[in-house]
Image (cartoon, rainbow, N blue to C red):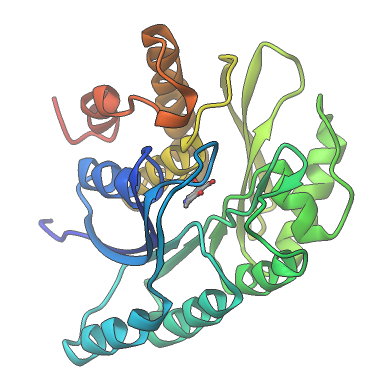
Amino acid sequence: MNYQKRVMAIHDLSCFGKCSLTVALPILSAAGAETVALPTAVLSTHTGGFTGYTFRDLTEDIPAIVRHWSSLGLQFDAIYTGYLGSFEQLELVSQIISEFRNEHTLVCIDPVMADGGKLYASFRSDFPQGMANLCAKADVILPNLTEAAFLLNEPYREGPYDKAYIDHVLHGLADLGPRRIVLTGVWTEPEHLGCAVYDAESGETGYAMSRRIEGSYHGTGDVFASALLGAFLRGLSLRDSAQIAADFTAESIRRTKEAGTDIRFGVNFEAGLPEYTKRLGLLK
Ligand code: PXL
């Protein structure tokens, strides 16, 4: 009854700009999970639209941190990864999964590497193949449509999308290995934006859509993925978790747009945390 789930969150710490760990920690805490942070790098800001940011790579520290956790006998209910800066980190994460996975561990990989049809500038063109190999070890992956195209080594297609194309992408991604797929950035008409979810075991596909709010705010992929994982770890279905995460993200964007905040500064998800916690049944 009082069992608290423990998540290993493997992301960078971008000090300013609300993404990766600064988003994953508060959202997973609001979902009642214990979050153990494995920082892959420390940056003064994220890399989206800022210049002159600092970047300290922590790849060298990871093996010793993990060895210490191992010596303590720590067990994890989930391993959750986001932005990974190098091939070396892909390999390290793969080793961490092999070492810490047990039959109850959910491995959730957000293959952060691309958006809007383009690979992020910091990644080499062979990175997607390395990420596809890592995704083969996941239980759940959450690519956007650009990342999905790179994982499948197919050309990126602009929306609107039809269900036949979405099914093709979902099935192709499941063929890489993960049983559950959450494909983000899906839209069939301009008013709504959301995601498609696919469970390869049951063969079921579902959609979780929200009203579209224009503007490309930084860190929303991390807000969505963290909110979905938090809900899923509470025992909600993947589709219901996706709907809660889509609504939480859309509401955060709406609030931020209304405030006129610089799109690089991230979204005001904090104001939505009480409502999120309520929807998970944790607050009256
Ligand atoms: O939100 C994804 C992300 C995470 N971490 C860093 C980033 C980005 C996207 O640009 O730059 C450092």
